[in-house]
Image 1: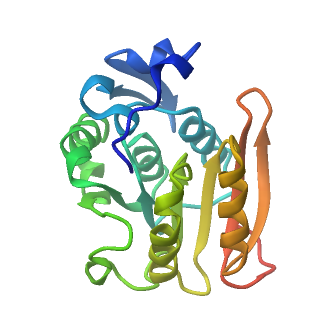
Image 2: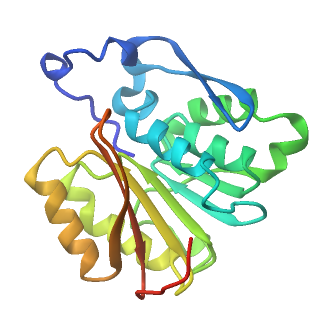
Length: 218
């Protein structure tokens, strides 16, 4: 969500992020994502957390067919595109500056008959929430959106608005810093939180959160 470049001296081994495009295969589709690091920084490249969550969704343990999904901090849109290909009706959101690239990727990678399943919409966390259905989503998805401490309160406010008792939040992230653990503690004050998947090759965790500790399967 934040258009803030990381310190490039810390980007050892991340040359792939500076490529103009990256290609993936999910849901029996080849997906080619346009990237633009120089213009938009972290919002315009595909991070491992998004790829891991896409793989998790593709495993089939979650039925997205016909479900209402919203993605927060979508960046390039890979995750939302995959959710749409898996049958969901997806609202794919990010800040205004990221929307042009996001829309480009969605239009380029969803077949014409699936285009109506995906809506690209501006969302700055904590702002303009009345334009989004309160508690109106089955799933909320977020990949690598937990990294700026100053956004945590607004992110929690946004999650609270979008959630009903049945909504499932799936957050995919690396736990890089103490502040990431702090966000999980904040999240647990409002939701029941469980780790549902860990990818050791990418050091990526997927957490499931719900308002109540409901026992049904995803």
